[in-house]
Image 1 (tube, rainbow, N blue to C red):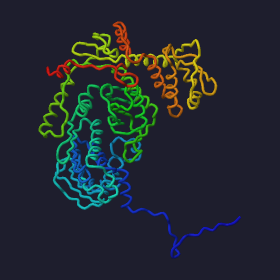
Image 2: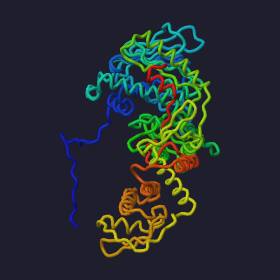
Image 3: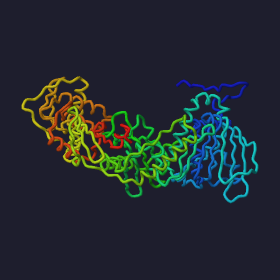
Image 4: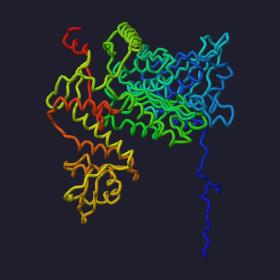
Length: 584
């Protein structure tokens, strides 16, 4: 065997190593890059510290979107001079005392990276006074180096000013967006904490003008009202699920109020806002049959569990978590929302007249905005005192039919319009779903003459894989040659219908399911069958048919939307009609 000699590349006889130990200045900037992405990241970290310090008032002051100036002021417990001198060292924290506590985190912050990371890429000025002390202290630190530490007058609490963000990392600063974009991210961050901590007064000032002021509230519902308005508040349903020491509770709006993106979804684990694919998927599945495609609910979801059953030490930003029993969490979230929808998904009618609250308009003076705020706050209070009721469909007085498509009814001070096709579709879907869940299959109806249907090569492959499952939906399908199938039976509900398109749609749904988990698309196939089972377009209905339809709607849990999420019913209060005609 030939020997291979390894020679060391050298300069002046010395070996040159390719691996080098980075200096502390670069290490700090790398660490800052992991934690501090933009001004909103600073707000997140400092607000978490304020919450941990027991603050009841948190004020955020912003100039130039936070890129030039950012200040967080709180009335928390403050810091002593000794603690202040240590707080900006890397991995310095008051929130962990032993290794065991790392696996049962009960505070918002714990890593001890945030302050050091912020200070390494900006100039920071801290004023703080510990409760019970006569004087406070001031610290100025620049690029991670302490420049000043002295006694200073300050009320109890802490103020942290961050100036010239990324001044020593110009490449990072180039990637920042406009001031308004960065401000938008900051407001998103503030709202995330405002919903999980309604007892804290959050205030945001832009260029020294108040743009957000959320007063202390005793519960999150009032905070939803002040943030999203009456339309969202009126549409809210509640849900709850408790299993041992794990609980899921929350609120969702989707019937008349929905959003074009996921920005209205707020998920909290032990009061910590998180992003979690598992929970988001459970949310999507629960709302899927009551929302149109590309529409999303307003949803606040609060999960509570023992600290040692969830790992929050997954990512430097602390927004990702890992559950010890992920299957339990998934099922509890999905079930709680589905049961909430069943209990509340009727159309609510307020006994009191609806209130009209002025929207925030940027051109209004500060005094006018303040007056609007006081008015809206008073109307919150009145709404909480107002009693509401759900009326039944069968109790409605039928006025007639509009364009052979809509049913018009009235009840007291309310008139109601019902989409008859959407109503038929929801009724059919719920019947099919109930039958499938109880029996594991749908009742078939044999055809006198088998129907031949030609399929594409891809559809034939999909059919081969999913044939048994499709047959459980009430079809009796057999391959007939290389590119055709023989249809011998159809679900009983499709008797007399042209089912060719329904078969193709069902194959499409099964092909679209990921990872071969066809169970994920069961409801989609049932939707297709329900849709094809009812008469589409215009249809004149007699009074007895209308009353029968309304009675069937009463027996359906989710009766405000069709399975695709389109609305079935819309109610209008007499007040709204009279106001339109200037009679109010």
